[in-house]
Image (cartoon, rainbow, N blue to C red; front, side, top):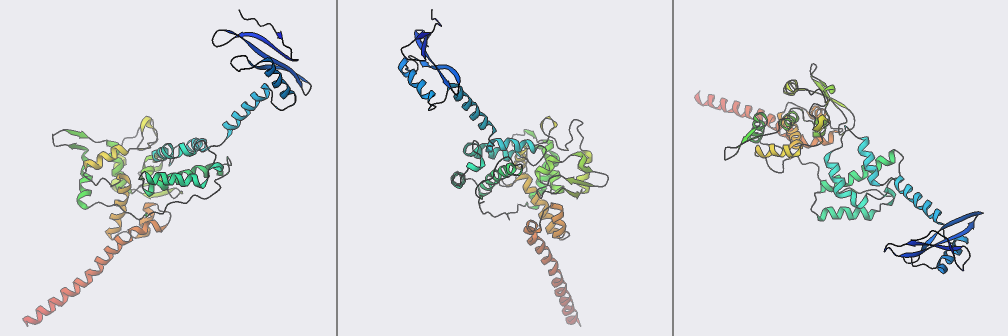
Length: 395
């Protein structure tokens, strides 16, 4: 049996005990004793076989520690604890992201943000503090996304999310900001999605009926919440996130208005409810355990419904590049702009655009309506002239 008895060596302050190694065999375990700053210290120097150490080697370690050339075991442990504590207190991009999510419950946080962070930002930046990020790091991310065939809009969303996370930390004085400015890719934001009258009629039919029959006669029931969300978007022009965040407390069915919290422009907006939108909400049953008009799982705020929206798009036979909720917002705007009955300022207010520049993308639709109206006068003049010529001929 191994003994804990101290055995002296020929070197001052060095002794050993006999212990058992990992292989079950006995081996010497060397210890050293010395004074530092008036304090007597006794600590292990190492094992004979495991650390390949002898009494002589232990004496060299003792000398180095007496001279302050090497820290004591206690100092090493304290340094490790301090390093771990410092690491835990570092505001890395990953830690900032977690705090950012916590601060933005019931808000604009979307499944897209979470997906973009997990897929594109976590690996290259998660363990870094913002001040450690270099312009080259961001350039590599940009080139990586481009090589993977990601659209310019996706690249911009990922880079914008990184900037947003860092700005969150800076605003709360958690960390210094990036030492450079992120350059966003240039892109054309003027794309407007629209539906033909036939496509819109088919979509409305699917949204109202909610049942699709395939060639085999098999019926599929489309998600009723997704159908009402899309129909409500068509009647109001609201963004997907605004609809998901909408609470019953923000709806005034009697007066016919609702308040949009945290819209893209940043300032709460109040918009009128059309009769159709009012009727839709009036018929919608409230869920006592949820404050949301269109709640998700567990009656909490919904964050995504993309799969169900795509199923509706497919059932209505719409183009695959038509983005269900975003596209419907464009349909709302395009329909009003081309009606000739809504001016661009009113349209801007309904869409809650912060500036008229975004609404101007629909100006050409209004111009076409005005042009058709102007041509009405031409037709009247032509008809009047033709009537006079006919009358003169008869006379």
